[in-house]
Image (cartoon, rainbow, N blue to C red; front, side, top):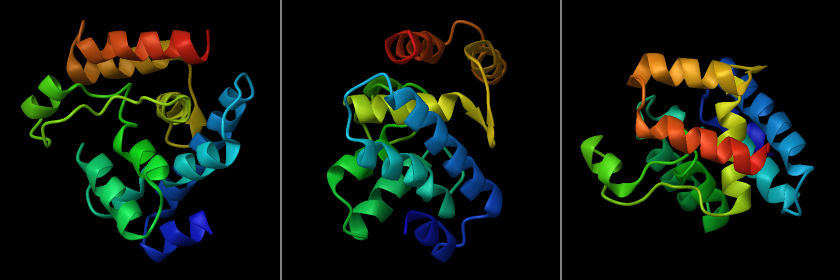
Length: 158
């Protein structure tokens, strides 16, 4: 059903393939924890649904809105809302032009999907070194988001 939703919203095949790869990685990461597997699976498959409207950083907000409008519970919408990197604190959100609030993953399921997304480049699994290099190039060395990604990695992967 979730893939059908992405198709119905005209999400491109590369985005659907990315979402499937993130889901596979999230399910692997979940094996180390006592989590709601259905929530992880659905959240991972729909985490980028907002890209059907925008490819900007605000796709997380658009995605949460789409999911809420479709009747999904907050637990799914929050996965989409809080999945970018290792989350964005309110101060950075304001600087990025996002509505002023924290976008930090709170639940274990949110953290797993966010980090599975970090560890997936397009539809390929990547390691932490790749992720750090990518974000250093995009955001500059020592950007606070890189420390958050490493902290999340240590929490989820060990």
